[in-house]
Length: 388
Image (cartoon, rainbow, N blue to C red; front, side, top):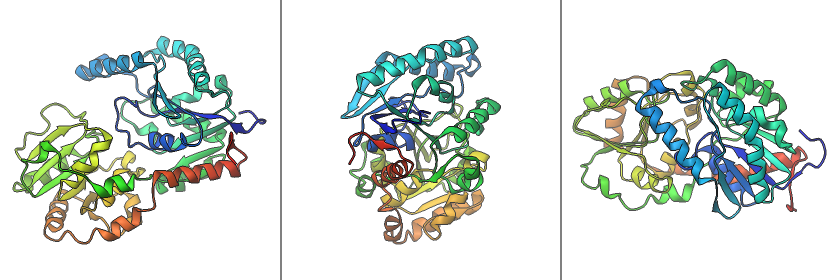
């Protein structure tokens, strides 16, 4: 990191997701949206933590095709002050070497077009650690929102080494989970707990009922989010849905589970929907659920949908994870399928007052969260160019 010129004229964010294909409610995307009100932002689509393998079959083809489409978009302005860029990121050992050689040049060129010559780097994808020095940043933020080394399909030792290096170099390491913050803050050069925000007004309003759920009878039990094996517990979910045949389960989100994993007639798999529409699907349900597994990943998580669910105002049922301890009395917690099914029935029969949940998250907006980060940067001597 440069020790002089601590004024940055823009942010280059190495995102953990692809802007074009993932839910835009993620921490890094939302933070960049807000920070782009202050300085130009270049969001670099994920360079990947787990290379696609031919053995993945149809999923391999899907991932490669998706990445190629993203690459063809190049540099795109998605709103004032906020642009998205998809750099070359080739798979395999030789591909990785080529990527590390050409990527910094691509990113610098894209940033320069936006007027960013003294960047603050924001890293949400640990492999970006390999190109930091070639970008000559004035400062570095490392976003430690999950246990990246526990992500399915990554090389854990490799990701762990990037994580250690980033914590030691970053001006500040951001945590959104009290679990991770409590265990890892001492290993950081500087650490700050800033948990997820919420687009409160959008989720409180809900919106008109989507057409594809209009014919689904009530009571409706909804899950809105990625249906992935490293977070979602399909066995528990199937047991709960089977135990409640008179209730309709509406699942909205991309699914990476094997085809045919669920054939229950009271389960409706609607697929992924744009971020701007998810509040309508949440509001169309009578109960909202989080049927998480009990992995190390979940133990360290703080899912953004918790605040979104509370803002919508529907009763929430979840398996336990540590972050729920800060929401005592606002979420029904179940530790197995039987408890989960009983909690859902109770939520239908006695939904309760949505007011306390909404009050709990009302001021937890993404704008407020980005303000916390800017204040911490200024405390550390990093200031956005032109900011009084």
